[in-house]
Length: 175
Image (cartoon, rainbow, N blue to C red; front, side, top):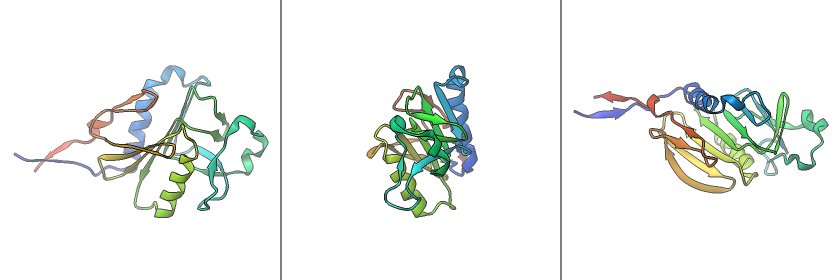
């Protein structure tokens, strides 16, 4: 008997499952200032214009919150700030996320891939994960440093030690 891994996953299924897993882990902290978890609707502000080389995340250590509405934004599929002093949030979020997850679909072009990777790499502490929506492998980075790829069919762990197990959505199909 042969089995084939089912890898056809809808973008929202992957993002939603990671969001639920993190939300369950951090439920007790969700209504405090220790955790900010946003999925697809969170606007992360940045300096510079999209698709231009000088784009960077906002260091809020010397940041005037009045300018937040004038800055450009991206909407990561998921972003997590966990016990992170580098955050300022309202409708828009400024700072260096601990984790950013992007699930690429056919509508994401190469320019968007490159711009978001460059943007998230401007913080040396931000862990950023990239998933092709029909793949079981995830590309992993911390700042500008490439990490080993992760297998989505196995439990994941963030650099900060948060376990995320979405392996059950990758079911085996009998051929």
